[in-house]
Image (tube, rainbow, N blue to C red):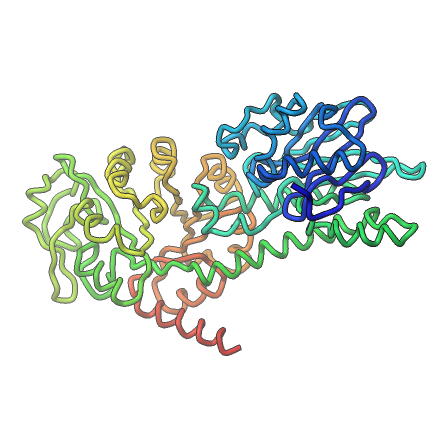
Length: 484
C-alpha cells in the first residue's frame, strides 16, 4: 500500500515513514534501525515501501518501540516483526490494547534509555492518554549541531472525554495524569518536535517548506511549549463543557423534599421532575436483605422504634415511611433495580453499613449497569472494600473536608469521585479537583443559593432534595447559552 505522504528525512538520522493518520519514524543508528510506532495493520506495507524508497531494508530494523498501545500505533507491528525479526518495546500497562497480536519483548520503564549504535532514547512515563504512555527524547545531529528531539507519546484529548473513558472501562483519573504529564514535559527542552500523528507537528506542511527553504522547518524550539499549552487548554475545554453537557441532577433519596424518602413514590417523582440520576442508601437487615434506608434507626421517618440492621425484612415490610401526609413502603434494593436499572439514569449508591460492600456489589452485578453506577460512603474503608472487591464500579468518597492527603489516598485506591459538602464547593476548588482528575459531585445542597453556587462552580453533579428546581435552573442556563 502506497503512503499518502512522501517518506523523507526530517533531520539528521531521523526519517518519516508513516502516513497522515498514523506517524511512524525511523532512526538510523549506524548499527541498525529503530522504528518508532507502526500504526494500523495495513500500515505494515506502507512502512516497508517507504523505507525502501529511502534506501532502507526492513530486515535491518532491530528495535520497534511504541509510544502506547492503541491500535493506530501498534497493529502493524506483528507483520513487521515477521519481516525483520526486530525486538519490540511497550510499557506493560498497555499490553491489553494489543488484543494478543504480539507480546512485547521488553517492558519500557520510566527513565529507561534504549541504546543502539550512536542513538540513545530517553523514555519517560507520561500516562493519561493511556495508562502506559511513554514519551521519547533523543539527540539529532544536523549540519554539525546537536538538537534535542522529543515526542509526547500520547497527546489526544478526545480519549479523555467521559464517554470514551467509559467505553474503555476507565474513570476520570487519567485526566489528572494527563495534566501532570504535561507539567512534567514542560521541563524537557525540545528543538525538534515529533508528532505521533502528522497533524500534531504539521509534518506535511513542514516537509513542503523544507523543499524550498535552506532552514529546516522542523527545528523550532517554540513548538514544543506551544503544543503542550494547546493540549492543556483543549482538556480544560473538554472538562468545562462536560460539566454542563454531562451534569447529573441526582434526586436525593428521590424527590425527598416533597415525598417519603427512599420510596418508589419519591424515586418516580424525582425522575418525573427532571432528575437524570437517583441517589439512595443501602442497609442490610438482620436476615441479610438489602433495603433502601438512610438512618441507622427507624424513628425519624417511620415513627417506629428500633435499628434497621436488627430488624428482619418481613418486619420492615410492615412499616411505612411518611412525609407531608404521604406514605409508602420500605424498598428492597433489588426491587428498586428491577424497576429503574434499565432507565437512562445514573445511580449513586451509598453504603450505610460497614462490611456490606460485597453484598451490594453482588446484587449490582446481576444488572448490566456498571457504567451507570458510582458507589459511595462517608466511611473510607467501605469505599476501599468496594474498589478491592468490585473494581468495575466507579467509587466516590463523601467528604466533610477535602485535604491534599485525602486526594492522594483516593488516587492510590482508584477512587475517582470526590463528593464534597456543598459549602466547600467554589470555582477554585472545583478546578483544583478537576486538575487532579476527579469527578466532582456535591452533597448537602440545602437551598437554592447553594444549588446555584455548585452548578456555576463547574461541578459535575449534585444531590438535591428538590430535583425540579435544579432541572429548571439547568434549563434556563442552557437556553441562555444557546441564545448567545
